[in-house]
Image (cartoon, rainbow, N blue to C red; front, side, top):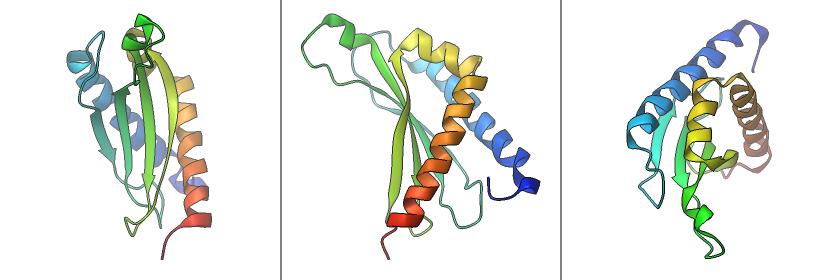
Length: 130
């Protein structure tokens, strides 16, 4: 986080966004197949950062096994303040029920998300478009 004094507030904001995503996913996440991604935005957690977006999507089936029809991912996307750049990464890949459990009981998931946000921030600092 940007400084020691604002470390708790960003963590709480991220937890709140993940909780909203869990609530939406609990009722809208299909067990198999594709679906429109579920998205939740969180405000910037540090100065000089754009919004943060969390999305759950269906893994693209590669035709290898029917199990791919059940795979889901959780992506964290950090937007630059200008909106011209973004950095994203997957912090979860697996079956829907496992994702719901991770979202509901997720200190480990929260740590991964916070790490992804920090890494995305650093990436944007190095590669932001003017």
